[in-house]
Image (cartoon, rainbow, N blue to C red; front, side, top):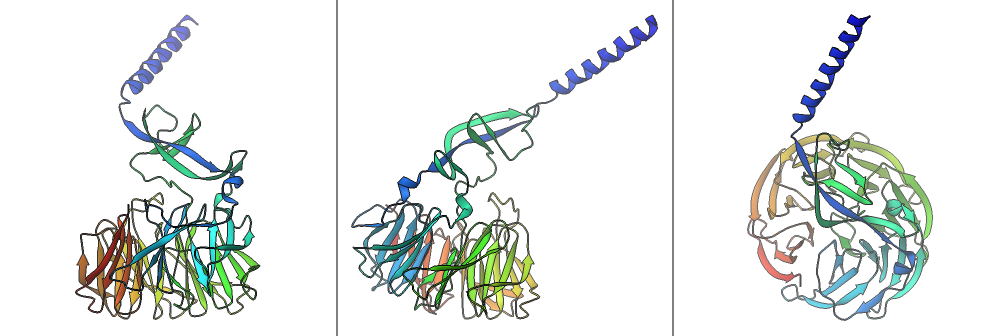
Length: 423
């Protein structure tokens, strides 16, 4: 019995010693950035849109073109409006203040705009006196976390970091909650807002958006996407959109691109195609699954172009352009993938592909049978987030430093027309 006690004591001593050694050897650490959770109360955004003659452009967001007007979103604040009658000398008109705004689409002087969770219908026939015609509440479930503080709208980085070692139970996590804050791995870009990016490609009669937009007006219908849903509205009375159907698509869908009689939806992990033969009720047709990514889809001549990039909270580790044959709409097929630096938005005009590469500038490729892209131009000294090709000779490019316009009549030799800088 005494021997057994001695044996058990010795075994326990060995285990404690090994544990101590393991603790002593735990010298790996990780740095986490502290983020504050941001909420907005309905009283702060359920107000009428207003026109301001002057407001600084502090940041840039999505762009939209309508009737010689360029509209630049300032995230969650509203829209900077620029008269582009003379593209070599664009003039700022003013600012349309819409709390919680990220996306717009316009037809016949009627603007459809998001305001956090709500969809607004605004008469902009007199820009200086916008009139709110309709507010459809609780449309966008991307802001679905509701507390007594209001709707959760995202994260805001503090100037504090936290160092944890491998004994911490959250050491292996990308992010976690602690002390009322969110801690996010400093090597990974946190989703600092609930923005889902989205499409363009609308006809110039209605307006034209970039490749990052969630709204599209097609004749007498409006389509918008929330974080996992495609929502259809009938516009027989354009002043009072009538919701006709809500379709579950996939989690974290982001972009909406109309092409022929189809809607192409870009998401974190794939491209989803819906048929709008019955425009009130779009119907699923097919999908193309790609690596997890956070970027848009653009379709031209039965070819879909999808950019994938790293450095996002999607945790994708590649930078490439996927070219997909959608001539057989029920069976999209990958033609080729091409390495890129850090692709963001894109546009296609004739046989030329314009790709925004963030801090790496803008690249122009000549598309030779899809599998053999030839780079013909590279503007390196700009930051390019998204691009709209306004016909064969005019480009709009938005970046974090402002709005660029280029003459693209010779795609291999782009000429800058003008630049509007952030203030």
